[in-house]
Length: 380
Image (tube, rainbow, N blue to C red; front, side, top):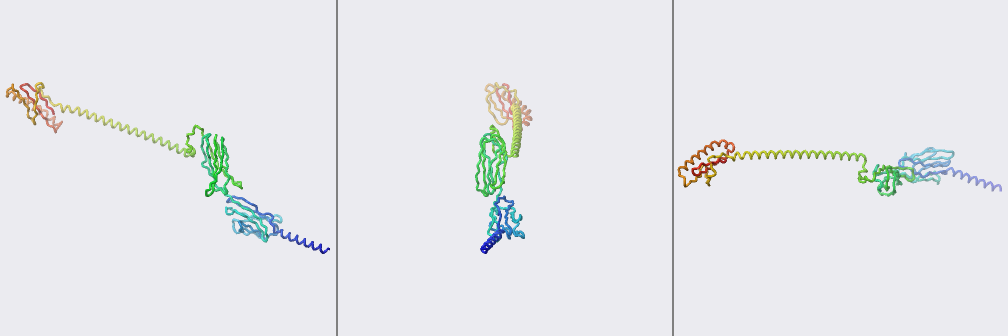
């Protein structure tokens, strides 16, 4: 009876010893899931009981770090370890420096000669850009308008929301996924403003406290200024100032051109008036000069009452008309007297005619009638 009791005690002692021996290789607490941003550090802890000989860390099935009681075996500076001892427990902390998207995946902590292991999952996120159309916007009071905000380069895509700091009569927003490369999300805010203020687009990352925001200064113009060009109103201040200066210079240039044109027209009118005045003077002088040429000298021996039809002859030939009542001799005497008078007058006027009209020659016509005294006029 006593022998059987002693056998039972031995079995219990062996089982207890085996249990104690096996417990020295247990993982008391394994790593936990973590989410980090690109460029930050990721830390994972693995706590084991006393008696361990080798701790191995693996990323997506590949051992990247090993820890022994003598020290740490490092294969890459991208992975390092820090160790802590508390009582009989030992904690190994693996640190991943400058986390990249390729580091995302399963993390495992295992012991040599033990089937137990601890695992966790590493999530890597990327904060991209948050874009708005403009930092300042001018809209018309009580008229609907849209404001957009786009998140580009985020992994995963964030949740977009709006913080409205202006009095509105109505507002709503919705987001649209855009399958670009990289993917992006667009948020459209529709509102009817009643006053000026700020609109803030907020992007929040899932699983992290990371957030980003952009603020838009909204200015509300009164309804009567609705003729303002919305595109021009959305221009920055420097562009509006540049347009104002350009329009001023253009207005000054137009005025200068108008003044120059008026001066040219006035000068041209004065020139034409002077030319017309000179032409009128020349015509007046010609009219004054022609009568002198056409006047000739009057032959006081001519009588219009006794004039009769004559016949012209070339050179100095004299047309004569004989009267049946006068004798032939009286006619010859009268003809000689008239010829002498005409010859004297022509000789006296010859120098003056040579100065006035050197190319013209005087033509003299004589008209004779009976014994009466006749008056001749010489025309040049």
